[in-house]
Length: 514
Image 1 (tube, rainbow, N blue to C red):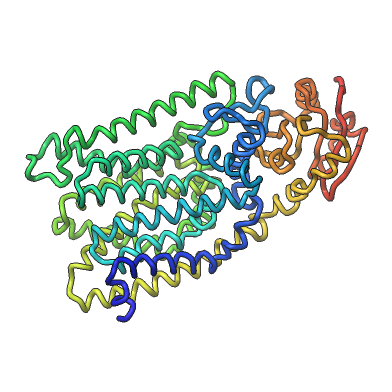
Image 2: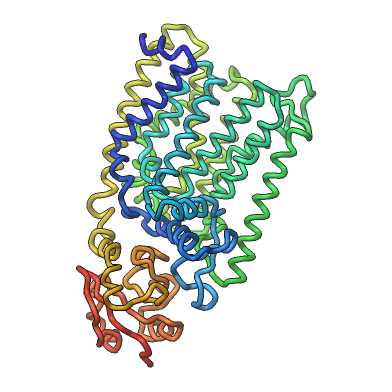
């Protein structure tokens, strides 16, 4: 057990963690995909994030008044809209102002946040399990999730939100060592930031809060696990108030500007038709279930949870509580947002806190067993980890191949290099365009860096929809799929072709009247 001996010191454990993380980074070819433009699955959400960032960078937009390329707000006259707390987009924009616009800077920041999150989880888990090997396995196991590997670098806020949750856990664990309230203020700030980025990251926050309230109301002080009083819970109350205030501001801002980039309500399973339910089950089975983790890993985790429920009386009271409450939270969250799973697999990312909780409690039990059992467990988890990493590499690579990336390769890719033609044609930076076909909010508009309109928020199924947008200032029609031109009602709009770049055709539609 040379490896185990090497992990006995804190410095060696940290070095080995960093070594494995960096090795996996290159094994997954993240050093190559780091420089890829936004593409593949959920190009829609990726370009929404980048559109907000681009407008911060290019137009010096105020922090609390973000804008996007699509002019669907204020009756088609602006892109003023807000979703999640835009701190990451704003920070990236300021870095771009210093070093120039490079999407890899955004991705690198996302990866750095993920690393800090997993590293924090590693140290927090050590304090619970008292075993560096098991702590490293649990934290790095998340780095074998295809969803984490794909969405982590690719601009979405879900992985940063999960990472900030793990950082919050770490500072709670530090509080138990040092008993310094400053650690709780940092933890509360990180929980707050996670929930501002993604409200679905609140699961463990509410689980921990529920236990603390239970102790305060029902248990004597000398029997409490957290031993929190008002001084200790004040940071979390303050953080929660900030979260509520932000989402109230979001509703106010979007209502005022008559637009929205994301929906902050619920999409429950009981408000859907049987046909949609069957379709979601089918896509989960064929695609997204395999993207969360190697299916065997998910079945194993379920089996471990059942085992822990069987021996629940042998667990620490707080562990008993978490095993039950986190499972209930997982089920509730799946039911409340079930409809979005049809095309939004990243909604499952913040549910990984449940998997982590189950494995921590399980391996803590294993660590208390006889050495021979632990050594068997060491061999099993190494094999388990390797298979997960191999599967992750395969599935993450598939995201950039075939149908998953077809829309980008066949239609959108050419828009990234269209700027020289725009300059040649005299299409200015502030000239609005109609970009079709594009069902997303900002994808094609972001690629060509032009404000305007896509199929989202506009009715381009009839000529009146085009004339309406022309009346709002659209000067050019940009078509990325020539088959669209066969529609008869488009004839008046395609009389003045002024340029073509690969599959993209540009028409002048200035001053056209119905």
